Image (tube, rainbow over all chains, first blue to last red; front, side, top):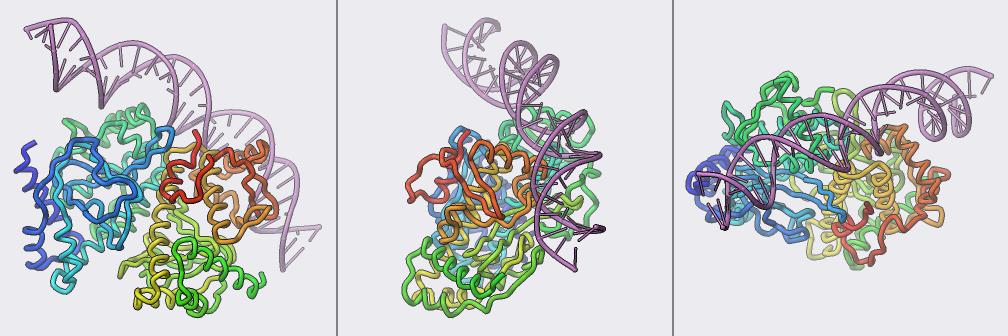
Length: 251
Length: 251
DNA sequence: CGCACATTTGACGAGAATCAACTGCAGTGG
DNA sequence: CCACTGCAGTTGATTCTCGTCAAATGTGCG
């Protein structure tokens, strides 16, 4: 992992992500360029924020994936949501908000503290108007993502859950300027996918193979590409996240 | 439905609910007694807040149940969470927050506008300190409830989902001073339960019968009583919502 | 009474979990 | 350099949970 390169790529991803959520002024961009903390590296499986901890120190993800997950006493796990490069993990506008689930690194990750950026947007909402708007949009996005996860696990079949999740990840990578002809980097084991989608590891494997066989996806070198756009209907790119939630799925 | 009685019962439920979340001063109690709007009645199946609408007008539930739900294009539904008497539906501390799922009445309901109460807590956080704290706790509770719903649908078997949900509802009713020897009022059809738990109506019926046969629950007149405390471990009443989420379930 | 709706029941099949083994591969140390 | 180890992925056989279909039985209500 070349930390320097990752940091630069991650920085661009943050900028593109936020620009997709709100129009940023030069002042906003300057804050984003200067205020994030120095890159911090964590190994896979590290607890970034503990369950119940105060959400006082949010992190930008520069490289790798972070997730929130809930563990039952008997060891069953449910992944709540994912934080990709360009995402902001552990942010809440509510004072005294606490983590209702622990944040874990799914892979080796590079993070940058976002405390300064958030403080700037909150202290001077007039100056950093774009940043403040983006933070609001981010909070909304997280909630929408959790609801999508709930719908997948509650009301979709295994292959629908898989395509729906992969579609969402692909969309988010593209929006952040990541992703290419061979798709996007997905540093998850099939066990992790199962914990996200409420499926056994074995069944995840079979669903992936079926999707590969029918030409819906391609996987190589830890990257995934969505090939078959027919699995989701044509949509105007202006569709909001909520609209997508209701219109992305086929029966 | 005797609106006068329901209003009084609902008002007590609100007070008890908030007192369970934060210690209220006399000032807080006075605000709660005077500021809620006049009771509003809705029939079952009414849309209280539309998807995407600005969350500018939260409602106290005085009687009946409200839920949020997401509908897929092919008609499949997923209920996100429930709002019982004493609960506050449609509140967000974030400015410009929008409903990421529509709010619907599951039964005939009686609501009271909470705009005044919320405005009081936000305008004078120093004066209505308890109210402000309670509102923060409510936002947290809603999020924890959604995560519990996600874990149920993703990682639990049908009978576990049912007991887990009924337990949660029973706890919330008791805390609000509702509920008695014959349990609490649950104005849901089995189809609604299925939409919440990600199960078919037929299977909901069979799970309920099994639970009745094994003496875990009792149902009569639209009321449900949880009988078998062995299905959840003994817990000190001080356990937080997050702790409950991880410790309530048996394998 | 008849109608609409909720609940119940049985038979059957589909989807997914489980169990167990095997493969492929990267890292490690002799 | 190669055996050894551990982990992720793969495969087949089997079991089980749950959905679907269809019909019957309540139940409240105009």
